[in-house]
Length: 261
Image 1: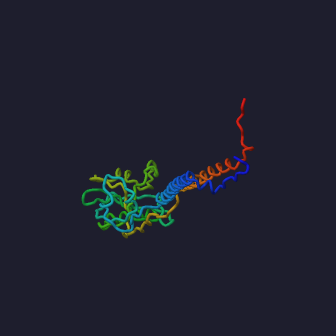
Image 2 (image 1 turned 60 degrees about the vertical axis):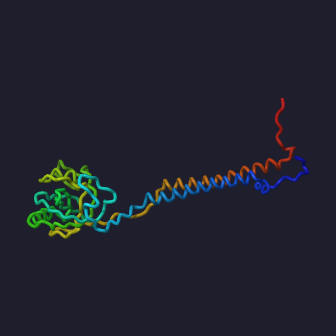
Image 3 (image 1 turned 180 degrees about the horizontal axis):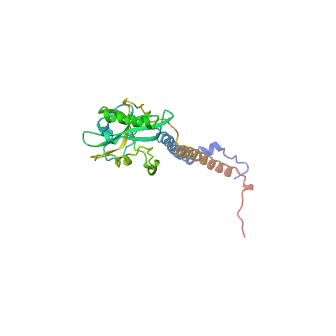
């Protein structure tokens, strides 16, 4: 290059057809990365939002759960109604049950539906074991109404109780089956917390499932990565254009000549 020849500006080089084409390519790549980042942000919210289950609308138990089947997520916490008769010999007492921050006892019944299927029902809470025994005696004389409404929940794990020392503190359907006096034509995998008022028992607090939203931080991290990649695509185009401009602006006297042996 002649020293008198004016070197092209960076803007002139950027307007060359090949660099304009390269710019469009970089913008397309950046747009793709940005779209992936937006998708990751949406995923971070979608994976954190609790499903809108309409749990406070009372549905028939048979419409959300079946005997001999696991409790599905759409059925967890659902308010349901069911008609059933209680077996007088199968009432159980569970200890160490908290109700509105107060420790106490649950009274649990064995309900049999018209089709013969069995359902565990937590009927209510009391503060002492004597009160629980008294409530069971009353229930055996005056069974609860056959129409039951309550919240359906998955069975608790039997490992949370100490059967060897006679302690029952979890509502495990699998454990209750071994205590029931009658055979069943199938058993529901979850249990019902009754909202019906039962003589001698206080209602068990069973709030609706939480719908609190929290971000999935891993997806947020991926979204930030995609945004950085998008910015890097534009920066790479600029760096290549600048390298070309610097090479063309360098005087011939400063050019590095190859070594000749």
